[in-house]
Image (cartoon, rainbow, N blue to C red; front, side):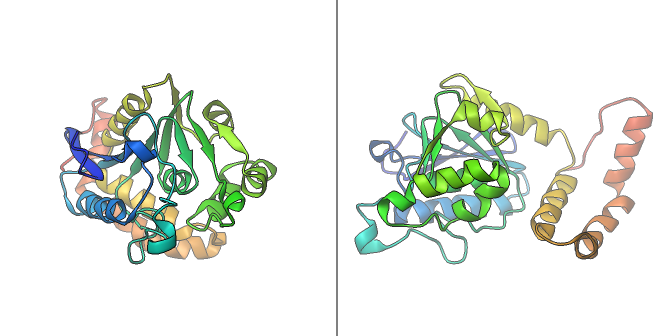
Length: 256
């Protein structure tokens, strides 16, 4: 792995873009070059029609320790335009994104994972939002997203006391989709990506968009937002193929 590349981008199998944060000496802390490299990778993920799933992981046995505090006093928070920390936390991606977590996912690193659609983690991994201990605020999704992902008082303990959450507990609370042995988070993420890829790419993307666009809305408003997105799906050849495959008891053949 080229240590000069802050993010190493590979395609480990057709349709999957693997993005590896690659600053292992600092537990993959985010500086501006890494943020810009991640933004470029995510732009490719959404723009390339051959790509159906993205996986985000870290090099050297850790996911990410958050923003590089040594660079922070001079450079500020490493955000990219309106896409947030590392171009991830405020991005509105159409393509599903999976976090594969080994070791530490703390501060902004945890916020990167929270911005993903699915999370796999090694049973030795851990999560934390220690911003208050550093005179900071978990402002890139931590304070917004975490209380909706964990029991309220568990989330508030993490946010207000900088408590650490071990991955097995995160899985028990439903924050982690798949728990693996140490070193197995990426393998679990690839298996999860394969399950996503078995379905219609367009249906998956529209489903994700509906979730993004209707979050926090009342039911009536949510349906008015959803219906223009979902109604055209029911008249597509993809939907017809899904119905034919079901009645014929065979796997669907999706047109990519």
